[in-house]
Image 1 (cartoon, rainbow, N blue to C red):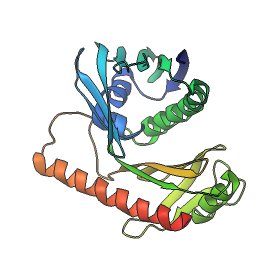
Image 2 (tube, rainbow, N blue to C red):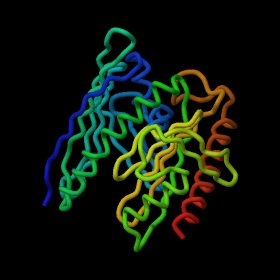
Image 3 (tube, rainbow, N blue to C red):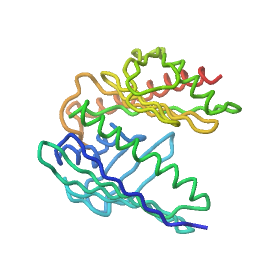
Length: 268
């Protein structure tokens, strides 16, 4: 049985409307705070797509008003399920912007569990967006994803493993210093900016790291920023042409593999 739902949240962001628009309405911008690798066709009727772990999800852009309003909607499944997203931007004095996010649609048989996960997830995602705009302005990130099962382990055991690997005491608290060595990558160094029962988020000088653990599963969603990156996000071609895209893709694949090995060893 399907079930309609709606989640609406407001957040104040430390950036102007144009900068917020770049963060929510361009592929590189979304890559820098949300999940997966993203592309956005910048027009009403265009396609917005997100690819995570080889799975591509597409949506149609149903509203395109730069620096004001963006809306997308996924196609309906055979039983009527779909997801719709609306972002409303309102500038405020002092280089601040209010962003209103409305996530609605129709969920499937396990709608209550899905709804609870979405309701818990959105405050964290908006917090990550705030971190991005506050600390990595005009920079874009390489998104990193890794996942590994943790069969037979309780959430408390998984939490303890993650905390230990990050050099964090339990309970994990915001402000705590974290460090981890990942073979083939620069050391993770930073401090905790989010800690709840499901997630630990660490902000470093050039990265946002998210460790998400659910029942029997751990997911990593990281955003690695280039120290010299500058300029607004754009879906257009980079100044160095196709070579830059190849380099970014190679870097993302290398980081994915390194973090996957780190996570697999941790949970072995």
